[in-house]
Length: 170
Image (tube, rainbow, N blue to C red; front, side):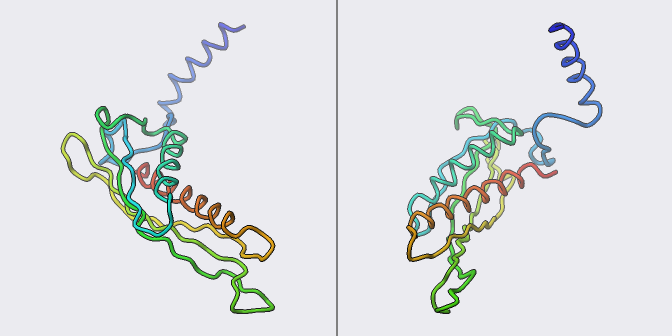
């Protein structure tokens, strides 16, 4: 029984690529030669501490989850992903019904610029800007700092997801 299951799995792996199915994402023409990526520490140009660290961690997780590219050390990679968290903007999403000057829900938008550079040629093969938003409730009873940190962490995960999606779009 186990031998039959192994044979069936091997047959599926042979047939599925012919049907257009494959493991990992799809790469654009410019990224066809890129199999491994190293992530440089993104610069933090904001007043929010650790936002670039959160982004780097989220990028590593997202690249592993996607599976299109493998993570590698800078000396063994095909391309290097680098960039900067350029700003974090806060905006009022809802106001308090009793006091319209008090924000009941606050949105935090993380803006990121990124570049993917080919290590063999030194040319930038992909670049772009992404923005992602997280929100938190500004209440007197809760810990606003913890809520803000969670919203910022969520926004950086969304930004990382957008960057990896941009790298895997055909």
